Amino acid sequence: MSLALSAPRELSRSDQKKAAIIEAATQVFLRDGYGRANMDSIAQVAGVSKQTIYHHFGNKSDLFGAIIRSKCDQLLEPLEMPSEPAMELDEALASVARQFIDIMLAPSSLALHRVLMGEVQRFPELGRMSYQIGPVRIVATLAAYLRDQGAAGRLDLPDAEFAAEQFYAMLTGHLQLRALLGVDADPSREQIERIVKHAVDTTLKIYAPR
Image 1: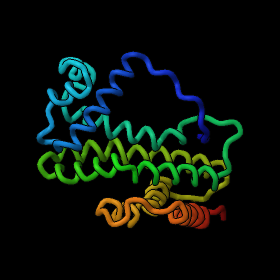
Image 2: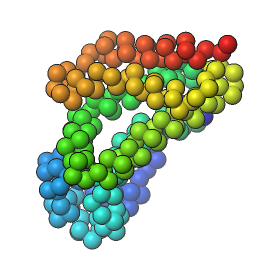
Image 3: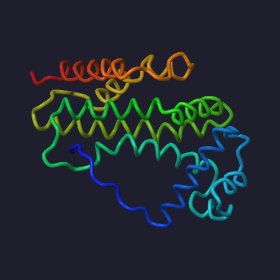
Image 4: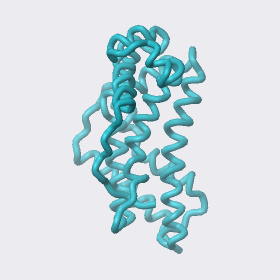
């Protein structure tokens, strides 16, 4: 598994409509919260019929899941795209880390996180669904990449999933907490680069080939 960027594919009409619904649903969920949000409001903002939303997403929880999946897709994009030649390991991890932090600190991501935390007690299925769609999938993809590096002799790691979890944990830490609490939602690029370097250097040091 290697990392690179390529030109985005052109969206079909159906994909464009789904993207518009997801964008509208995000606005409504952030404005009204999950419990009070309804399909009529989402349909009005999206400029589609309510039946169109049900056709594409089934129900409200599936639509919320699609929003989480969309964010997750952005995080996974650099890990899933082939490249020639592949990045160096430290560059690849740094690229993943920067994109993860940028999306994690995006206002819409922070707002969605707050909505989820505020609603998960009343709607526990949202928590389980979001965890499987987001963190589990993100960790699994990075773990697969790290496992490939281990097979190639560039890393020595007995538990790739644990290594991936710890890598992301070093990136979130108090950075996400401060942003969620409104203490520092816009850290400087120097602050971010320091965190990225620490996470990459620590991971490569701990799992350097013996």
